[in-house]
Image 1 (cartoon, rainbow, N blue to C red):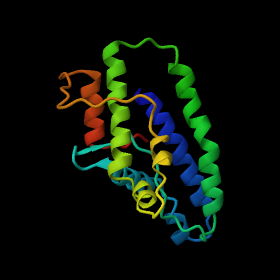
Image 2 (tube, helix red, strand yellow; image 1 turned 180 degrees about the horizontal axis):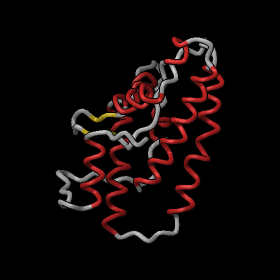
Image 3 (cartoon, rainbow, N blue to C red; image 1 turned 90 degrees about the vertical axis):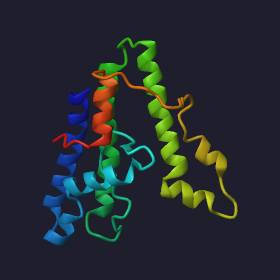
Image 4 (tube, rainbow, N blue to C red; image 1 turned 90 degrees about the horizontal axis):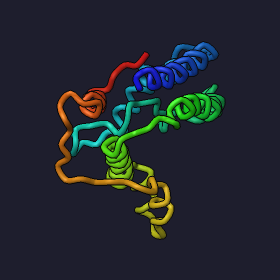
Length: 174
């Protein structure tokens, strides 16, 4: 799993570095700093009530001014990098067998995704605060199957415990 996450982060670090190199001045280049965008991701996708992050990170640039040089090209490159950063992981892992316990863990993590979106995501909050909220639009973005479990216990020394350590304290993958 760690090698997949490292590969994913490497692709986005390289994209950020290439964008920085294309900038004409250091001020604009700083907007595309991988460490900064990763930190913003770690800070944004955080569930404070649980003291954990929603996932293993990425980059976050919602506040990137679209008027800045290279901003639109950067967003296009992020979109173009998504499939190459994700499909190799899916191709490598899709035929692996998993236990019922591992499936339950996946469903619990999907539940955290929905929890974050409903309680903390500023785009969802904005959309629901309108005079004509699109509740269906929010709900269809949820995974089709999720789980919540009160006071879920994670076995010490398990893979789930290891991942929870990463979710509690983000790791520098590259």
